[in-house]
Image (cartoon, rainbow, N blue to C red; front, side, top):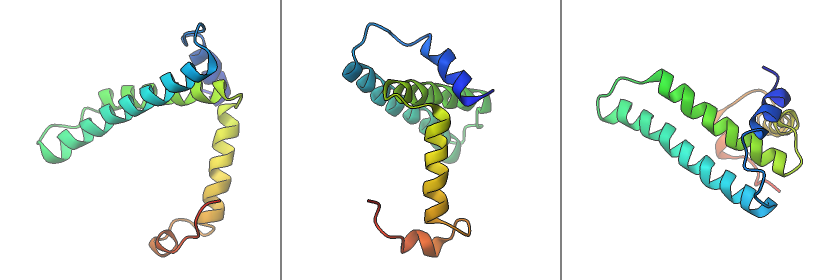
Length: 110
């Protein structure tokens, strides 16, 4: 699915009555909650002996994507724009691909 098409579909299920600040707060809090749920699945798998529930993890990742999509829309950004910016940042940080050395000694972000 195209990222911007997904974003438009996700927007349909956003509470349209919220003003901008509350939309952003809803997004940030929801994102933190869903990331916590994904982290908890991994924790239980690694430390509690649970099988990794990949279907549940896929669902949580979808919920994370929904919050990212609606936050970006609130900021007037397309998901493709956010993705392109992230890739450009990572290419500048790791021009030859990831390395521990560059990670340890990278310059501070502006």
